[in-house]
Image (cartoon, rainbow, N blue to C red; front, side, top):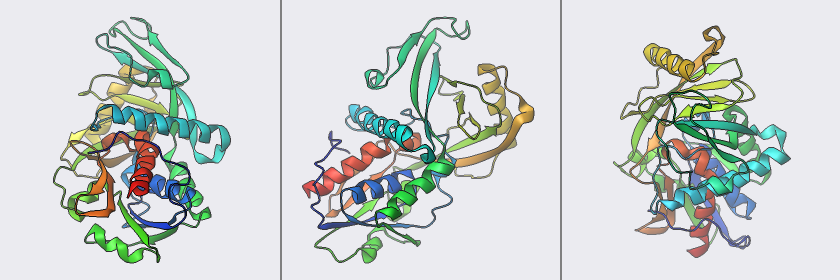
Length: 333
């Protein structure tokens, strides 16, 4: 469960609280940065900071394979993240965030997204504007994040604020408390994604395998349709265009599959016929940490243990909003 609150006072922690964040993906690093920005002593513990789901993500801002309670909370967190990314794109060209125009194509007419009024550009597409087989769609400007740049940037920003990093494999998330600095208010924040299955015995967390293909060709717009079975998308970044994808529930294989690669290229070529297969430069696989509902709450048995995991394919989209929620939970403890 999660509370319908996405913000907190700037002086919430008064500098007397510390936190150990468990998890080195985009949720964990964003939580660490957000808490450190508010004056907390923060340490991050993870089994790996290199091979994470976040490092493989196509990474564009769009709520995807995610559910919160209440449902409107996902849009609230997404909007907080959107505003953060927009400022980063304006202020720091080294962070890997850029605003890109995207187009979603619909098989049948559908209402505008709940977040439509929060983005700077959002308009309806007419039937046939892209392809006659679509009933229309929507065009919008949203952040696209080059994760090979953004994750190191997050870590560097954290380190500049005094955050310490420790590579360590834990058997239980509560073991992280041993890394806390001396503080009257020491919190552990569980941002372990799929690791929550083992670290807190959460059987509701399931892997959703996502394979992507990298293309050295700029398609101009982000392009995708609303068919959840096809799951076709092209996301242009500064370094390449990311083609996707797959959403294979309970498949935990990290090996690229040749058949998946061929299918991804074929369905992306239907969206963008100009796609040049000779410019494919690689493929990669990540496992989205899906859950029936995102868990962002205090542990019922321990008010100093906060859980923030289960974001599915929307970790990049919800990370800043989630981090602000974690800060609010610490403030209220």
